[in-house]
Image (cartoon, rainbow over all chains, first blue to last red; front, side, top):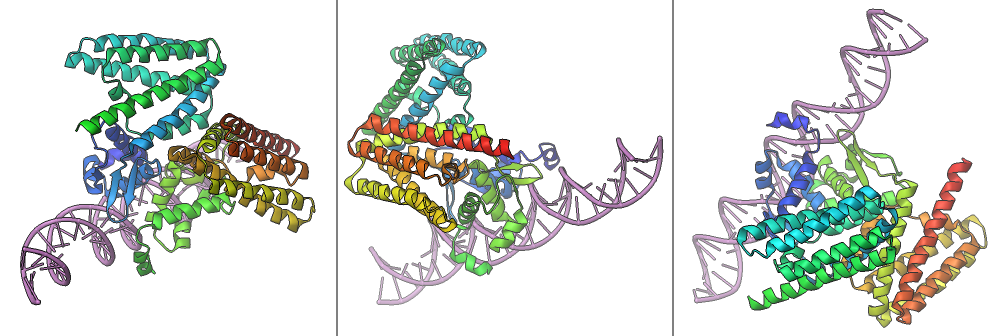
Length: 236
Length: 236
DNA sequence: TCACCTTGAATTGCATCCAATCGTAGCGGG
DNA sequence: CCCGCTACGATTGGATGCAATTCAAGGTGA
């Protein structure tokens, strides 16, 4: 096992970082919980050294906080943190959409339009209301949403913008938007509509509209999340 | 020596990170140069272990790149990277200015206006053209510029925005704007004027103007830097 | 009963050690 | 003279060991 590692060269640390990030994103590692070096090291079959380096990176990324002599804990953002992150996200992705409207190529436009159908499909599938259909709708929506935003950001052609947005995303739990949409067909249809309108504005090379719609899109998600979180915390 | 360390608790790694960042920012460690773990470790009187963790953090911060089995190198951003970073910076700080216009308090407003005189002073001092006066002008300008931007960002009240901007700043060499201004009295006066206009817009609670002026301010700095860099590289 | 102290398991922080890798200088064959 | 190969120094990558710290449980005395 240690031998296989010599193949992977160094990417050991980065692969641990990526994997931990995924596990945190997927909820496998709970928000606010402690991450034990020894445990992670055993899971990956390595010593604590690379694990510690990975945790340091996650700290710099804003994913965990390291408390002296206590260890690393997954950061638990407050509702205000999340709301503010969505505001920044709107500004950044809005600008990405503006640039995308200017710079996007036909190929990427096709990819963008390809997601339209997926968003529709997810919305309709959620109508079935069965556990299974919802899970599948969730999967499709995630796929489409990821592709949609990534495509726009890459199409913007601004790598610094890309990095800033990515860093921001790492600081907020994944899947919040989907949770806020809550499988509500009405909301999902609206969501699909918003995406389609943004695509259209980009295709029409209407930079300002693409930006404004994206900001609005982010703000809507933010409001849903805030509302939903308030409901949950007040009803529990 | 190792005993003294037990006092400092853990902040060892973070203090190394901060210090290295400063040294890179000040040009003490050159852009594009390699950072040798052993050397840094000796300088701080520690082993390589905490140094490596610090370097991992700097990697995550986008300050250095770590090449497998070769070490850490201070990232050398291309002119395009810098231009794009300034564009993003304009968008982010523009939004910060907008929020600041909404949320700033009297105390912070005073701080902001306090910088007006400093910018003026720096501009006039640069007129002397002596080596000494320039160095002092540089110092005053840096002080004022740091205070100005920090105040606006903090006054925005959005911590995620603050973090995003800070992260962005770490990715571009410091002092570029000053270099681009090049001690030119005319440019420095313009620069002072721009700052004053932004302050005024914020005080007047004119959110959109504050934002637009800030974006324009960033764009102007970007253009100066691009021009100046082009000149330097073509004339050498 | 309760405050306070002690003790020990769990865990982290750092140092040290060894293996793996890279770049280069030197060497020999063509 | 040049190309390729090898050996070696410099350096990094990861494992291990040990001291320091934290937290909690148990014990002691008033």
